[in-house]
Length: 228
Length: 266
Image 1 (tube, rainbow over the protein chains, first blue to last red):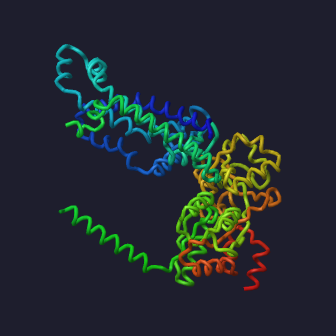
Image 2 (cartoon, rainbow over the protein chains, first blue to last red):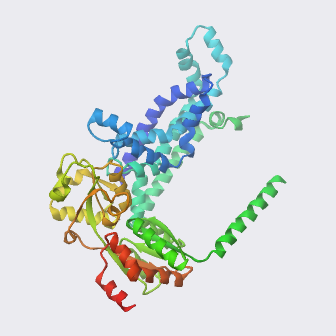
Image 3 (cartoon, chains in turn brown, green):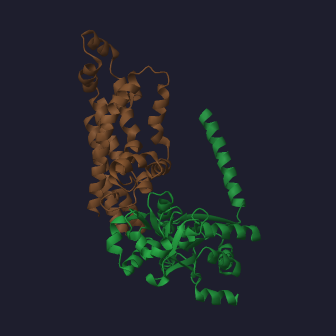
């Protein structure tokens, strides 16, 4: 079993869920409370990674990160080297890939917050930020936990995008899913099944823990239709 | 009620499709190594024109195909970049005995885009030490024969330790080619057959001397699970024929001497 690959995957998943938390909160807030008429377009964009094959995303990322791509040029100017085959490159690709897994639970969760509470908060003189921090956030804890866990687990299990832009560098871009693929390719099935089993157990334990802790609240946030 | 109607229609459509597939039996399913991408397309097109038999090719890495064939993948013929895989299939009783054929020996080249500002022909190996070359794409040496050959050649050239940190690994040789072609890597050690493909033909290349690594022997074998064994044999015979060898040769594959003798006998 390749511990280095597992550590890398976990590190990647932590970075991605942290970034998605910071980006996802305002984005989800805006998606819920904005009255912009073209909002549905942004909703569609956020949901795209759910339906796009990872190869499409990976292919575009590879072009974007290259010396002729916008992202690649920007990175080259700032850091003096390309973005493909690096850990930050992997983080950026994964953030895009896992975006809906963070944003959608947050949106579902914010939507269940009773508007009367928001009105009450406004009447009592709280600004939007204060209302968000003291009313919306505490009522959305289950949605936030779900968002964090799903983006973590989804990044941990990511394969296609990493395969497309990673370049398979030990300790940098060789994640655990890539390592399993490599082991199968090298006909080392024993090692592949050990790592696979470990990943299966980790994924199951993480999900079971969260679903267990948030059982009732989660139903409301993540499956709003099931709560009725 | 609606659901039943929908399901029955769906089943009808499905069975019609299956019947269509079954009637369309003149089709050879080939699992082929990524380095054959362009050469085999041309071979298949030529063969289809000559015989009317359709050649249905899946490209991928030999290790993947090996695992899939062990688990019952429905291929008639395997064309592997590493002859070890067909050997193993034969030993495991998953291939038709006696059909193993070494169809070609692969070659590797250092490849760079046409607008790279270096004199590759003059520098040869040394180009990889240039500071402008930040990443060098190779196939994964752990399981891809071209990657293995690249690393051995780098070692023999005495520069492996110096360039090791620059190497990035493609899942197979075609992905390594794609890394350079998309310019995310500045140079690549690629299969000559890919460097000769239409998209990469204009690039700069330097052929790595064949004595720098052990030969990349490629092997074909007919699988036990083949539906149309005679059809597979016929296509294999076409690979061995003058016309087939000519196409392989034009993409830069070396044709093994034993095969020349075999072809002469036919």
